[in-house]
Image (cartoon, rainbow over all chains, first blue to last red; front, side):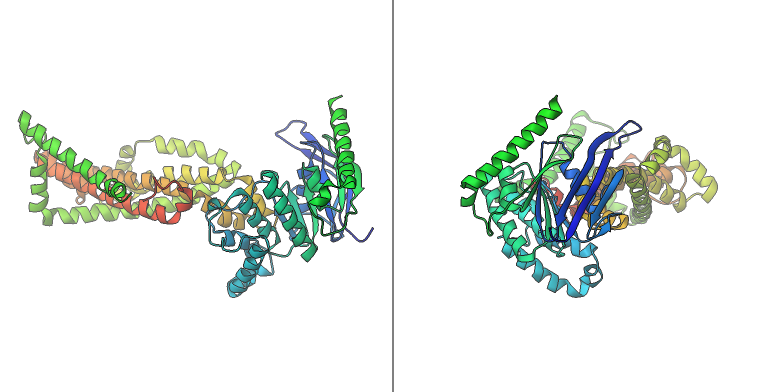
Length: 267
Length: 257
């Protein structure tokens, strides 16, 4: 394996609510993701997949264990990260392009140069809009865009500050099947172009197998990694590949592992 | 469509006009005495005839109200930000605020007069105080109901609390703030007039007290008309600003101006 970019070592996380015991979301979770790699995390619902993203981005702190990004322990929000969620979370009072520019108003060194370089940044945003097929919709407000368009804009926002780490929390979960498949292709293209390290949390096994080079399977709560698969299909991958025998076999294996994990939880 | 918008714009004026016509007709029909309920035509005649004498009172009331309102909105917004962004401040301040707001303002005016003497100062303070509560409650609600996902977008980028407040919390609270401004501006007039009726030698409230002690009922009603007009005018200003600044929150255009 090449250089480790994201790592969790034996991490426990408890969601504390009031003074009670709290919910143990993760127990003894460990994983490694290589620099420039595309990892997917799949597992039963409520197993703590999104929690891993919150730990990696520094929004949560583990109660035990160590979370590492770029060879440094995560202590607060990691600034080299871009995030996209299932909900596009566009700010409704800003136009699409202004939404995409938001990270540049927050993250240094862009922040202090924002006024002088606004034109240049807008050009950059326009180029991104073009890549994701949103050219011409820059000045629209979020509610004037369809769900798929909002999610495209949300991807642009996650990428505008050229983050080294991209965290995607079921970004295509709320979209119809065809839009979703379009966006898989868009995401693959963006990833091959810029090569950030990506962690994708998803319910969709086909999505995981299409996009990732490494898939982690999690157990039911309290979550930990129970299996991992390397995915060797050549890039760029096509939708036709998803009907090949090997692809279906991989899907099948993932499915079985997740059903087992769910069964264990029920016992 | 054009006819519909025209109707929408004309309708409020038609309703007001209709009310005056009904009032005039009913009073004439039943022979209501002038000192009980004057005719609208009499009231308008008084407004025109005594315009020069009424104008300084109207200006006085307007100035007092606007100053008090601006002060109240500033104090209210700051308090609302504090209460809306911190559970601790919320718990600490809310009972006091509710208790304070429950005191009838007319009971406070005599105290203000003892402290500041009669005139403009107690009137400004009364209208200021009366504005604070709705602004605080609305701004605090706007901040407290901001979706955590919206905040996470900025938090994950390492934004400071101030960045999140400016970038997400305050813009998100703007519709709530404007809703409260429309309530506050009408309340501010109430505050001013209460204080003017108790202790002042100028202003519409003071003029109405003098007129009623002279049983000059048409003049009293002329004062009411001026207050109603000023109220509508300032309300319209804020409704206009609202539609300009928070159009994103009122996408259903039936409610936009």
